[in-house]
Structures are given as C-alpha cells and as structure tokens.
Amino acid sequence: MKDNTCIRQQADLEQIERCRKTAATLDGPMDQLADRVLLLGNPVRLKILYLLHGEGRLCVCDLSDILGMTVPAVSQHLRKLRDRGFIKAQREAQTIFYSLQRDNEPLLLPLFGLLDRDKIPQPI
Image 1 (cartoon, rainbow, N blue to C red):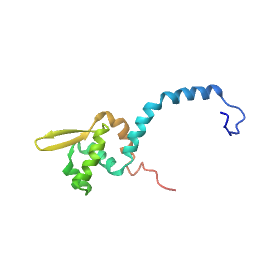
Image 2: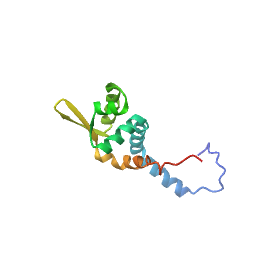
Image 3: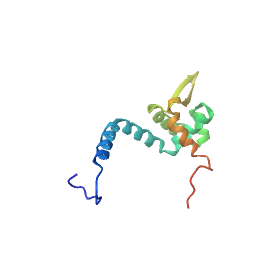
Image 4: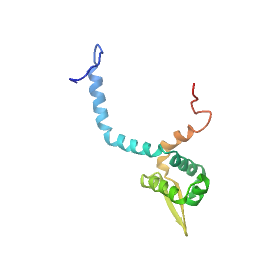
C-alpha cells in the first residue's frame, strides 16, 4: 500500500483482509467465468445458443439458413461453443445436431431473459 493515493480517513483493515482472501480464492474460477463470458460476447454465438435453447436442437445447415451465413462460418462458431462446453453434438446418419449442455443454463437463462423487449433497459 505504499503507492496508495487514496484520501480516505480510515481504512477498515478487517474488511480489506477479508476481501483479499476472498479475491485470492476466486482467481481460477474468475478466469474460467471471464473466458466463458468473453465467448458469449459475440452476437452470432449468443444467437446460436438462444436458438438452440428455443428449438432444442439444430444442425449446421439449419443455422446457416437461419443466420444467413455460410456453413463454414457457422461451423467455426459451433466449434468454439462445443470446445468450451456450451453445446453438444449428436450424429444421426450423415447429420450432426447441436443442442445445449444443460449445465450452462444458470449462466444463459438470465441473458436470454434480457432479450425480452420489456426487460431491456432503454436509453434515457
């Protein structure tokens, strides 16, 4: 704290120490969460997840037609989502269908809820 230029009158040293310990325990989980949130920062990937949530499962061709994108472009997004555990793939004959991994719903459902026009904060 030698370089601290804060102008507070008193520091709550117990609070500071408690928060330091808490912050130290969050390093690994926070990095994982930040990585996942960063992945969700892409509107195409977020749309894919939203569509999979609503439809249950879709193939890459379905998503290509829906999003107006090439199959290779959609495939790249699907690969990233699958690599990070957001979706799973299931082959049926020559077609691979993608669906959500249910363990990601606690992270995704609040985001999807924000898509309701009534819940999106409007600019002032």
